[in-house]
Length: 206
Image 1 (tube, helix red, strand yellow):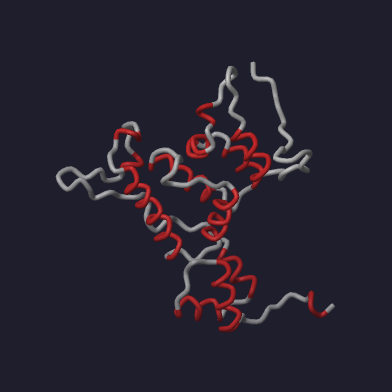
Image 2 (spheres, helix red, strand yellow):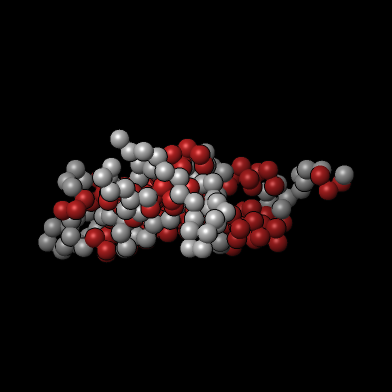
């Protein structure tokens, strides 16, 4: 079939625009011109490059007298730093700056993954450092294996805090994380068996 023959022609401006809008958060005329001159295979190879981060780590210039600086790399406990909500916003800004300055598919994919493994940075996801680690986890596995990420997310501090696994013990099981992991992140919700009731998979906790 002719439609299945590989296209080896240059993308051209229209297809380059469409591709960059779909695959990246970076959209400039020089970038469109660059991709317009590439074949589909060349463009894909470029989009799949795992480029270095533009900004290596978030930086906090406050407090003025003694900035917290690169606090996410500090050996101090994350909870010892003040202004956690503002720092979480700095982490978000750090991600977006890298996303709009790095024209690869990595950031669209990592953004998609955050819609599958979801936490709220300012509502129960722990400290800004833990939120930073959560974002980096998605970036690390953007070109990786979803099954492996699903396993790693069970050790992620932000996810475990957000879904109440800190309140889970053998004397008073909290099944919120297990339920969300199965219903939302992996196998999906099972058939409803009664009004206001969903199946619960239980495992004895010893």
